[in-house]
Length: 316
Image 1 (cartoon, one colour):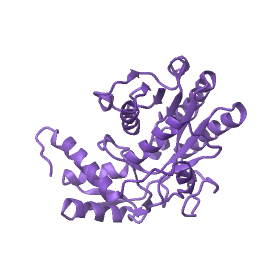
Image 2: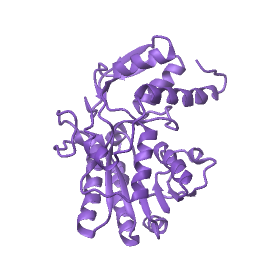
Image 3: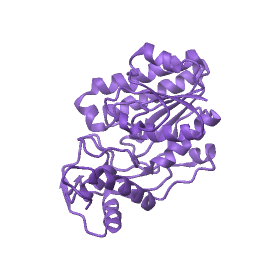
Image 4: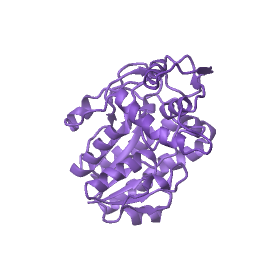
């Protein structure tokens, strides 16, 4: 199979590329490296094209004769979208449209990455795909627009497509040391460096944390079997862990109480998130999620190597 992975040098993309190569696929990565790391692809037999999804010709060329396109390229993070809504829209919405147009021309199956953030201020739990989406940020609005485009292309042009709503994916290759880092790598990084963990709000906000290996298993199976679905699919397994509970688990795994500092809650952050996983399990009945504690252990092990490589530092 020839599979195109946009954003393939990002942490989810690079983990997916590794699995696709293991399965014998010819993988083309399209990534402008603006929010990813080329080193994530070191040692992988993939074809990297350093281009933006806004480059129409580059997207068209990459998708030519492809069997599947996994569209992960995005400007991630809610806070980043608050600072630059236009950039978030251009890449996350217009970039998705470019990918869909190219896939339609080539006849490729498409997987589009959306986000649990589209549920926004809807208070109901767990989040089911049928409930109303009430986005609370430009990022969430852009993801909802992107998935709507994908599903409309499927309806109007018979483009085989699956849209996945990711829920707080974490794991190896997810970089922690930047202003928009996700909560798990931020916490683990701070803990290993014996720095305080920064919590925005009271820590009672909860998330359905999903290990990247589980996500990759679903994505790889989706492109291998060319699974399509007429509605978005939550890619998470129905767990719910508060940030305070996460800190307690990390403290137990590291064998010491972790220092915590609280800062005001951030604008646009969703208070609680938990997936209904019935649609996912119906489409991918064989997938088994990696338990949170085991996932955290493997993330810690990977990040310990990152910390130990810092000049004049050793692992905590």
